Length: 176
Image (cartoon, rainbow, N blue to C red):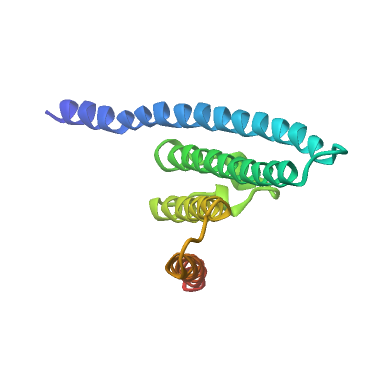
């Protein structure tokens, strides 16, 4: 009976390696999103060079400027999403498989990448996701058309809520 119990506990302990599927998949997706955002960045720079074309009408220039700003926000959003996936992959690995010795011993290592508990992972992901939401809000704000004073009031309320979210996330850090 003791051997059966030991074998079952060994099986349970080794079942944590299934998390490697999520780690590897998250890394591949992060690499893909980094690639997409980088390609978008190169195309945005290419289109930005058109901005200085002599003889371009003012309306065309304004439309191109708005398009470039929107693309820049989308690129930032893509890089933030890729960072979330990278943090998620590293965190899962550290929590379920093994500590990453190179990260622990490196002087260049960022605290963002050192995950010691599920709460650490949750807090790191929450901060980056909050930044993605802020960038997304900014992206929508760029294209927003105000047709009534209520639209402007709701937009102002959204800005106040974003500020409150940032304040609360930073004040929560001070308590630890």
